[in-house]
Length: 520
Ligand SMILES: Cc1cc2nc3c(=O)[nH]c(=O)nc-3n(C[C@H](O)[C@H](O)[C@H](O)COP(=O)(O)OP(=O)(O)OC[C@H]3O[C@@H](n4cnc5c(N)ncnc54)[C@H](O)[C@@H]3O)c2cc1C
Image (cartoon, rainbow, N blue to C red; front, side):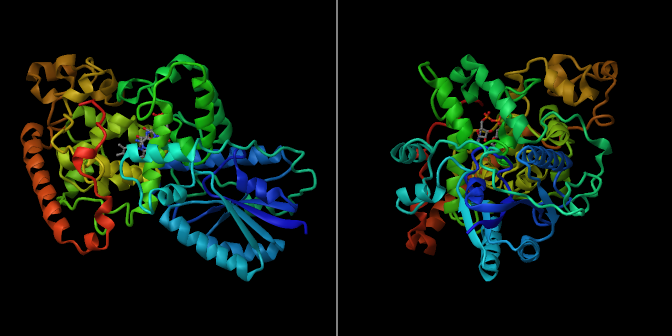
């Protein structure tokens, strides 16, 4: 039977390595490529940079579909409300999509699949957002998520390399397939503008990372040409505060699925072939395995984005301090390195991994003693690459709530940035107010004599805030509080009913941890 098929784009905003789209084209007479603006995911709190990236990615997808004599249909609403109408309107017989492991997506997809069944629609989904089938990794580890990178590496070594990516569909694949469109197509299904989404674009900065598959593949090509750089890549040697990014910035493209992680992986394999190259965890292959590691944890650990009822997360008596949280979020902490990073995040939507370390440690166990869940929310809204699993996993790591337990190693909001940028050029770029401070004061402008502040045209306490905490004192106090939280965790674990159910088998002793990045 020739099918009338909807391919539902969610993540996976690409044509290359899209096995679910290919499955749609098998025995297909009509194809409707659909994207749904879901109020749960695409609400107005999501940062405008991210919305712009999404719109760019949708436009690019539509452009590629046109070349296949098709178009993208964009709809708004809850998928479970939208689909029954579409099934009836187009007499749909098959629905295809990429498998998504996020808890919300799993619930949503279950509801949609059951509606499809009621309408006699076959459902096919394929795994292509991660390198491996995450559930297979968990199975291979006796039903538990591996809690160390080393363990994950051992498992994936057993599984063999990730599947090779498949090519994008061609006109040949589309030979017998049509995408019927009525006169109303433009009115009903076109991609909305930012204004139509009620977003105010007047303060948007330059678009440094335009969304879309073509841009993703172009950027990937550019990086892969730099064979020496790729082969010698070691993440800890890259800089949090270089003026242009010292890592690939492919993360937004991987998050939205404009770039397949498997395509990224195999292109790296080609570059490595016959050449001496760095290895995981620090290499670029190693970075993609970090992604796989956190995805596996997010699938295997309940309530992964929360402290409570998350069996691997240490319970900490974080403070609630709205003023300090706002100061951190709005780049008003009085620590120029931290404020410059938070400014870059808000303006550009991307910051380096070690810059994320610095601000995450500062918000949580280092200085402000505010819950990592609050930081997670801010990152989720502002990062172009905001990813449910990676954001939650990395926040737990940085706050020493899970995976990383050396809480006594705290980033200094002053000394850390100086290591790679003595002059403070990064601070000058993002906080131009401080640009006339001499290098010896740019990380600590409050220490500058009044005359230096006057000459710089910036008085601390008037034009730029005093530091909101005394780092030296507060970080020592916080280490002590963290020690107490760990001690409590140990004693609770001994009596925990969860332990009796065997779940604490997934706790790891700090002694078993792989060495952390040596970047302090
Ligand atoms: C507190 C905190 C929150 C984070 N939140 C996110 C998030 O929401 N989304 C996100 O994609 N990354 C997140 N990261 C991980 C990491 O910082 C980014 O993936 C990385 O900085 C992206 O830049 P890049 O593409 O240049 O990375 P590269 O170094 O070029 O790495 C290549 C790819 O590997 C993956 N990767 C690299 N580092 C990590 C990592 N530590 N964990 C998982 N995957 C990794 C990404 O897909 C990245 O594109 C977070 C890190 C921290 C410390």
